[in-house]
Image (cartoon, rainbow, N blue to C red; front, top):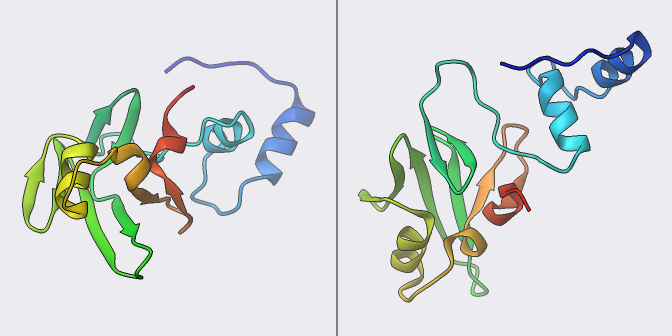
Length: 125
């Protein structure tokens, strides 16, 4: 893992922005830079898609205008929706929606702090 050197004042500021003991300094920096991703622990199974590392077990949802909610879960190899495995967000979204759908726009993912964000916000721009 690459490292960077920072001064003590910067370290104190980064440390003060941690919302919980489980939030790492790297997560604070990524959030400040607009690079929010689903954090991972060393050795945790992850699934990579379009430059984003999704933690195994991360929850996905879509709330339709009608109020109906569909949920899915990240597995180490893709997405599990309704007991079925999909190799990408979009194929799972198409099944959940009943028509073709952009999975990055369709799904929201739950971050470790409990917030839900569109999966698309996790991709690097």
